[in-house]
Image 1: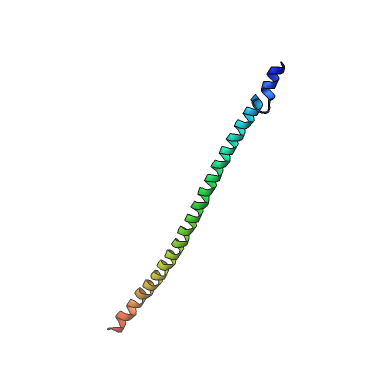
Image 2: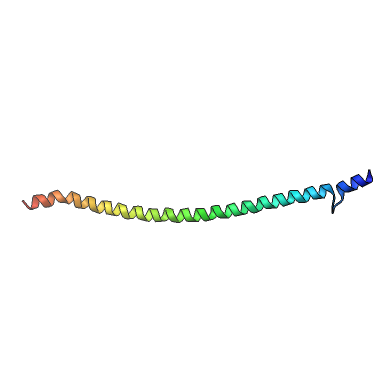
Length: 84
């Protein structure tokens, strides 16, 4: 009985120590995967924020062009009437 108990609770080579080490290895692997995924998500967020900022600039430019073209089209009738 003493031998069996020793094989279970031995701090260096016992079953419990082996399972604790295995569980710790699994936990470490999961933590590593979490860190990798968090880094990927942070990089994706930075990329999406840059794209959004670029789209905002483009949208502003297109809005300015639309306003200019609208003003030009609105002035066409007055130019046509002035030439008669």
